[in-house]
Length: 65
Image 1 (tube, rainbow, N blue to C red):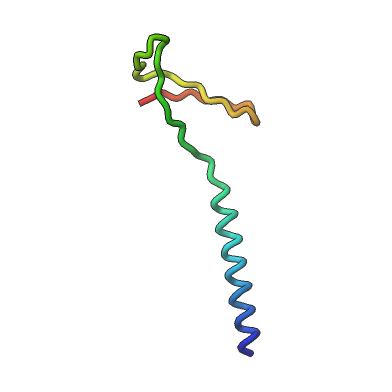
Image 2: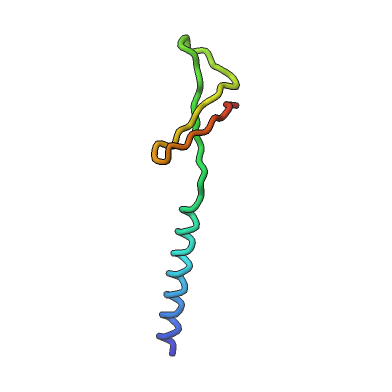
């Protein structure tokens, strides 16, 4: 009986861990960090940056802060 309970606990922990990993991979967000400058090196505030996902071909424009 004790051995069966131990294996049920191990199985439960493995299933729980597997679900957590799957959920962690389903996020669709990220960060892009950097500085936008002109050719002289001056900062460009409120610049529009186009981000392209090369795998899907989807692009989106963002304004820097």
